Length: 526
Image 1: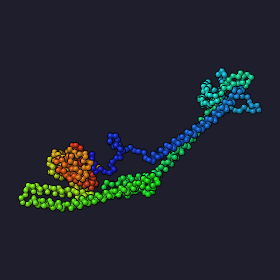
Image 2: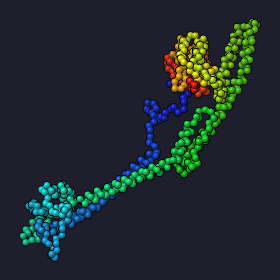
Image 3: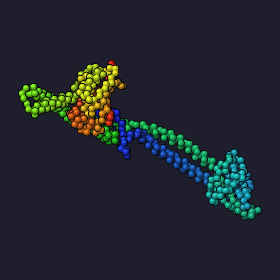
Image 4: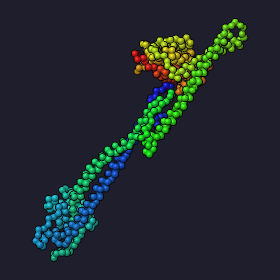
């Protein structure tokens, strides 16, 4: 498919070709604002998590160290030789005061030398003393910690987790003592450690979570404000990219504001560079336009000046041929060739002059043109010029457009003439008109050998020729010419005329089928 008059903005963005050479559509990427907000938020979240975790672990280690000191202190008291270590009741103070209440959450186990538990109790939350069950006693004795080294055991049930320490003593403090070794185990509940760390974790989660949300909100605002100059620069670049720069005088009034061209900032450097780039583009395009204008004036002036001498040559040739004076065959042939070539030269000059006028924007006539009879007339003329082809017409209801009837007829005639000149005898050529989405579609289809791929991309260029194209006769095909190697201006003129009418031409060609589709805006009344 070759679209020689592609409309701006119809293309897609592509990344570099893959290994097979096919272009890969670009994937949607995350905006810089979102990258900055998400990236910094992730770093802040990691810092908060690390800070909170370190704080909780440090506090837990500190509280656990204090608990271990209390466990060892309790172990020293429980291991003091006397009745308390032997399992009896602790004697009351000598001054007769009441015995101090036992501490909640403490545990004491005394095991005799024969493995019998002389004492195995713990102080409950209500201050009462409860005896350990066999499973709990087995959990305590099975821990087997190193001497005076606190370890953690889980007693289950209501008691939960304890830190315990163990020491072996010899009871020699009473008259009945046999100096036998005993194992004393003392412990303290870890409920305080657990509740403290849990409360701190909840507090940190609430505080750091709220701070994190505030940081994200502030960060989004700061990043958005910081990127505003870059967005304004991008807006200028986008508006400039939407301007038509292919032809004509180019005016780019958009520039980045001075506030966004501060070289001390990254966005300012981009804005300043964009302004410099736009100045260079405008200068280059104006120079190009000036050169094109000079070339168009030269072509128009040269074409205009050549019309008179060519007319004179053609007139003198016709005058010489009209005389009855005897001429040699060479003279007769020379006059015929002079007449033919002067006619061809005159046609070429007229085409060049028409192109120069179209390029200069010379207005065309504006009238309502019915394409149906126009196509019928053009096909009739083509049939008379090339009777060895099969000509078909497919027209229905009237389809009106606004334009210059003579120029539109020239478009159809050029395309039909191109089909007749560059396809072999017997080729079927069909011309039809229909409407679609507010446009009139003029289709000319033939079943000839097709247009070479090397020519399709430049088919509507001026003097486009390809000697290997689908020519008949001597094989000198051209983009818009004749059977003997035309000048290559027919399709270029057709393209210029259609463009001047606000339309475009599409070409789809392959072996056995070539289709030209002319799109023209329909008349508003239609």
